Image (cartoon, rainbow, N blue to C red; front, side, top):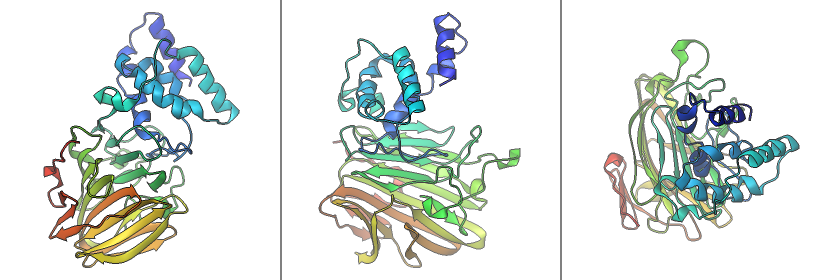
Length: 375
């Protein structure tokens, strides 16, 4: 709120030193991917960001939006930030930005019919941040956020290695802690011996040391594949995540997330693979299906179903509203498939390390090779 008007004024005055750095980050596109169309305006979480609320500074990014994306940005803005109330200070700041930077002459246009840049995945290998969205329509949109803490951000640093944020079908199925770092039941990420990871604060040797091994967007949809290394952040011999975010229907599921998390160390540990949904979500688990252990989250007609492939040695539980798959030892593998939707809940078949939903098969040991068909 303070910097943006000054930067814009310098550009208006012909001072170009900040022009390229100011316009390089995809601020508006990040908000489009992470701010939902739920009535509560839930948003994907990372760092210390909260899970709800409009974005006060959104109007300050109007000038940075590429011309071909402004119609889509304005459509999304009017249905999220522009349509919500907030405290007087936030409202005043937002209104000032609107007065200064409103894109006159721009007609709002449905982003699903807009440029590919606002529909495809956002991949940031430097910071280790990834955003995926299925569509821009209503509360049934599927939004997925992944983090890995590849770098240290200024000021507030969260426990972000192997973080997952998930909003779908008018429910937040995976949330995070914001600034409330001590409540372990709020994390949607693996915990080792009950702890999330080494915190990225203090001396230089505590900097974020995750790495992105691979990332790519899927054609014809908003999903993609990411491979992450987090062993230095977790202080383990090995900590790797391969994850395929497939945001197209498979069987009776609207979207599927297939995850293979693998850990090893010279010493034995307790590994908890955890998802923390919003309050009020009903969680059941313990059913087996074609050799896989299953769990089910429900909120009204909406659901998230999970399959634990190769479940031998895994313990399923719920603690303070968070769901966990627990393994102990010097090695731990979590091969888990998540599906979201409304109405009828699908069933799947498993064979070895593969799971099949409808006509789509996910090989949890080779997710990088997954090539989803375009719609």
